[in-house]
Image (cartoon, rainbow, N blue to C red; front, side, top):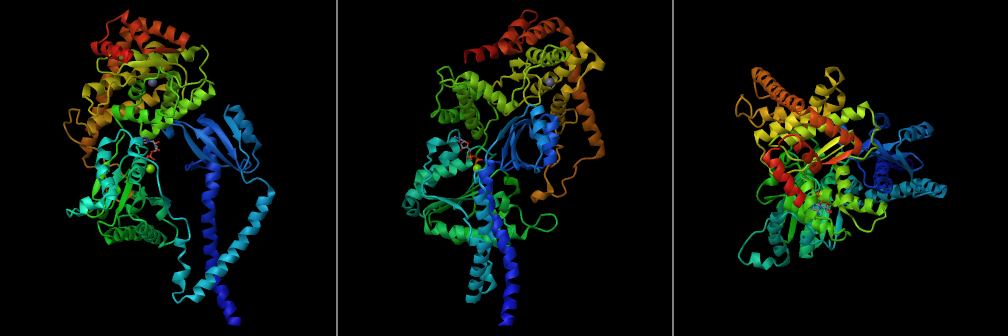
Length: 632
Ligand code: ADP
Ligand code: MG
Ligand code: ZN
């Protein structure tokens, strides 16, 4: 009797520890979804204070009695987009609230959902109870079975491993702007619905399809649409959920997933973020991740294990195809790859149509105009844009969304929250000259996109902004266009220098200078647009942690490095001189434009061009494009 108690105690020690982790793991998803509203980025308290001091914080939502906060911040380090970040706050910090008030941050407190001490009490009681119960269960199991520890360790099974949707309810018509991908998948749908057509002629349908593309382009949506069209169940799991603290859990999850899928065939298995498990094996620094390798091996085994025609199709998505293990891409696995890219003009138009269906739009809203103003937006960005506009409309107590709300939402998504304009002062005039400098140079250069508007209303980090109308989606950009862009971007600094003098130039141009330098460098090292010649001298810009290319040092000599720096300097110097010259030659019209801008705070592109035309001739293209944009 005595000895058995001892062994029991010895046995239970690791189990208690394991049980504790398991409990923590179980608890985490619920508390997270309760309090964070789908925010998965976090930062430390110190960092938050830093952001606050920089004036990057717009809004703070407090949760669980001010222990956690979701911070809405936007700043250059965050790519100038509004981001929601979670912060753990120290207990009792009344100074923080005063500080937030002082910085005019929008504060919101939310009562915690599981309110009341009763729940806390029950929670406290429940924890040891469940722990003890689990302990007894595990012990009984390991005592009964012959396999012993193997059994005790099989808690990979006990968690909700993957989601299964019997019907996704999404059809191809919900996905727009990806016509090629849809065509490709039409065949997969037919296979799931009528496999006979294929098997009769001995065709083997691909087991796996890999969707490649940047985030928010509709990969998940497409996979769901396939299941919806074929009316088959949809199993989904994210690659990161495979990778766990316990070795072997990931592999057992893969096994379970495929087992369930086989029971429900025909069906679709969707693995999101497959790069989390499918990275190149054996190249990690400091020893590979064994767990990940095992998971990947299991995945490969499972995919080889089922016959081509069992009716299971595995669809995986990633935005990092370059880091995938080559074994995944072999025939018989993910041998079909479908690229889902950021939509072009027509794609954006089609996506907007889909999302405008359930929105009340004013008849003055033309979706083509929105599509034209939003190059680089993904499907998710566009959906978000229409939603923001709808929220703004409701806040303004209007009955339908007008172009005004949509414009405001685009500006907000691209450049951040609107701030309050400066009162008339020297610095307001300086900012006005800076912006007019950009605007006038871009208007007088033949190869530059026309100005949409110039504004002195601050947004995000910028204290003034010049917006352009992207003329068309073109993936090819000429050397003359880049030179024009560099020159116009230098226009702000050039105006400061010409008008206020060398000693008065400001830090306001730092963002411009960053862009200019990067563009000029790319001209030399990537596009072969300098006297060094048509060479690609780009460094492989990959992190060694991603599995590949550990020694991606420079591929060129020190002499070439000096040449590159020299060429970059020459390009920028040349453009800056052009910018200064244009400013000097157009001083009178600039003074007039600055007066108008300081007075009205926003000047539309058409008005700007009309004023400039009174003093000087516009290049042909500017006149033509501005007509086009007015008619549209
Ligand atoms: P991904 O998986 O590529 O990151 P999602 O499929 O999750 O992107 O897209 C997120 C949301 O964005 C979708 O739910 C949908 O509302 C919208 N969306 C993205 N792409 C499209 C598209 N091509 N057509 C219609 N809506 C889209
Ligand atoms: Mg997705
Ligand atoms: Zn500028």
